[in-house]
Length: 389
Image 1: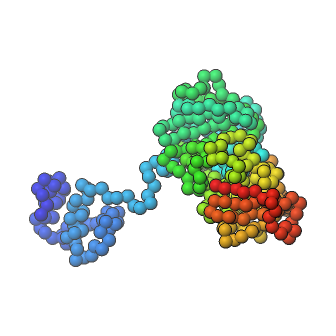
Image 2 (image 1 turned 180 degrees about the vertical axis):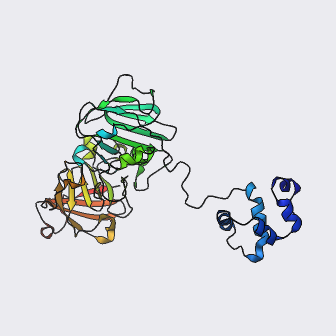
Image 3 (image 1 turned 135 degrees about the vertical axis):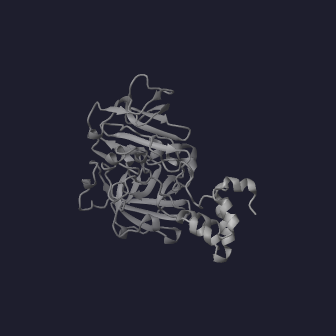
């Protein structure tokens, strides 16, 4: 029996309960597919013999909240468009490099947590705030200009780097989308990064070694409103359908991802300085050709640089402790142009062999043998390095 108080609030319930005819109710008020899916999620074993149960659930549905499906993204996990202006005039942007760029000699041994807006070295270009917010930090950059961090709300922050800021842009300044923040400070490109405290990437095994902007990174292009978003995505220099890229590749028990030399304390790992970079090592994938493996070396174990491996070598994502010793013949990549056509069709000559072996889920032994091939190298010597994560 349905209480009269509830019955009074439900349309047509009186007619249903008076007739007592489920068949009549089903004829007049058919079960729509979306409503039926919700009910079946709560009562998976409903059959024709249990129509009374189904009817009761439908009647009480407006007063109940169905649980979210297991694994559903939390509110705010998907970025909402908040950028209504381009940081540079769109016509001035030649190409965009997505998340995951590797440039060891420029301080990015690990895949980057920001994108690059390349403008062909033009000077004096104005830099605009892509969205509203409040300046939370201004930090000088080693390679020129400042990094300005803007908080949009309690969760979302974005930043632009290598900007020569206008006077008056300081911590606490309220900025509006489209407002001029300054001008480009270098010929290299403008960095744009974004992070959301509600999102934590899964491919970084030791959070204590990374800054918040990396742990909570989100793809900046997803924050732009249309039609600007599509216009910018068309400029991304990357093969395949993924325009956003990726910067977190760690897998427990696998070679792929980021590694830190044992001499680098966790407390210093997130510091943006050369003495930190030289003790980093990464096995990742090319930002423009994501099917190609890259070895990014900051120094210490081998000369700083970005390297390709021979085609027959194992993918780092498949290398585990059980694999044993792996010999990678490295070929140095000298990247200058910002487009996928930058690499010559013929692979460069081998520069040496990097021997690696996993000693556990988070320990790696590595040694470089310059000028040698895999057949020349027997195994490690006492000069081998230990990396951890």
